[in-house]
Image (cartoon, rainbow, N blue to C red; front, side, top):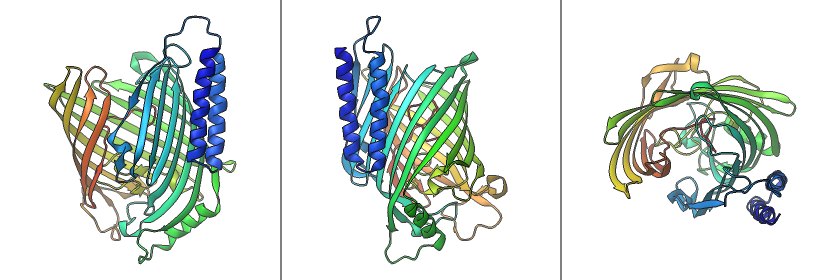
Length: 412
């Protein structure tokens, strides 16, 4: 029983930390739910029937924990561990306290998550953004209209991943989500933003904390040196359906020899239903996480298209187990009100966003950076990339491949 008490005490400390960082109802409710859930998991392991492996963990530090353009300066740390509640399970914790963003992420899985794994996963993510940008919906949203939003979000998610034949897998998931927009202001006090922009934000401000429920099914199928993934999500709030969205992600890697690779990716998200009252933050988002060179939170739209290729070249091998690599990324991307009607097979750098007529062009981006990876597992430990777009330069990070089975995926 002693081991369970120690683990429970650690959980209680983490939950108190959540309540301190997020003093609103979102933080209190999320920490209470997390404590109750993990207390049950700990009690299940209070009297183990067989010997359990010792808890293993290692710290995680990344440059973005100390500075990023969207979060500012601050501190942060993380822990990855195994064998906490049961032999073979995995745990993950990340905490960041920065100028414009504070966040905490806690996760537990019955096994090590990966493409085609079988098991249960529980994730709790809390984010408090003090300087979140909102420019409006669709490709016509102009940088000059930027509104600075103070918003909090908490998401508690439960997933069940099941491997099936030939390496394929299916993953049902459910989640409860709380969003609370506390305030907003214009980034430029002299600017006059579009009326629909401030109207949307006033509605979200007046409604207070919004509780919504999500359900979805993800699936994946391995292809030679790559993967084909599909995702579907239903969201409901106030007792009615507000959004239905489907997504497809395909990636393929070509091995060029001497650890050089080219990875291509195609991504499409399509909103097949939305109510008039849907909040903007439910929509697919396009920013520096998928297109280096864009600002964080830059575009929201019903539909999203991302096409890209990344070349990786080894620079130096470290202790024969890790490698420091350079990478170059080229991408084309856009958001649409309706991709079937608005898609245009043409390119435009820094287009006039008030003059889209008939079709909306894809916008190119480019990124140059480096990363440190483990040769054995392929795990990316840290990456830094400088992105170029028609709107300027932006420093950030880039994951070459994304998996819906990961702890946290920006694909949804």
